[in-house]
Every structure is written in C-alpha cells, then in structure tokens.
View (cartoon, rainbow, N blue to C red):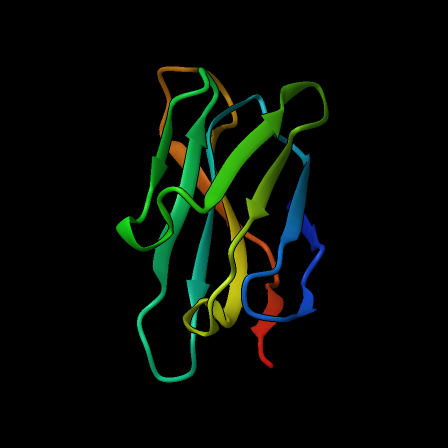
Length: 122
C-alpha cells in the first residue's frame, strides 16, 4: 500500500499565505511526479502544480507567480507554498503521485491523498 498524508490546510484571509505538505510512504521504488490538484463541489478536479523527480515544475496559469512547489526527495515529501491567496483559491487540495513500483521500465502507479481544505475568506 502507498499512503499520502496531507497537512497545512486551513482558513486564511485574502492576500495571506499557507503552506501545504504531503508525505508519501509505502511500496515506492521511485517517484516520477508529485503534485497538487484542487477541486470545488460540482467541478472537475484541476492540476495546480507538479514537480518531477528531476526538479522540473509545472503550474496552472491561475497560480503562476503566486504558488511555488518544492520537494524533499529524501523524505518523499512535496510542499506547496501559496502566497497572495485569493477567494477563488478556496478548494479541497489533493496530493497526487505517480511512481514506479518494480522498475523504471514498468508501468506507473498512481496514488491520491485524502485532501485538505483551504479556505480564503474575509
């Protein structure tokens, strides 16, 4: 089993900052990608930010310049630093990883965290 444990969500005022963390554990041979998605009720889950094992990053247009994703490879942990938060950032944020279990030539497996609520309000 592979588990992703998220933390750091909460209530913050517009313009404030929050830092999310996600730690992966279990039968992971090598992580290919870790990232953050978010979802509001009745809407499609969307990619917020992702980072590869090599350090390459990708961001949704709506968060570029405000959010920053980073990793601690030794701990299989990914972080999302969220600055200049806006009301439209309110959502449940989910951690995701795509990883190899057997070898680097095998198929990728996928795992999701339970989600952490981020609420931006005045």
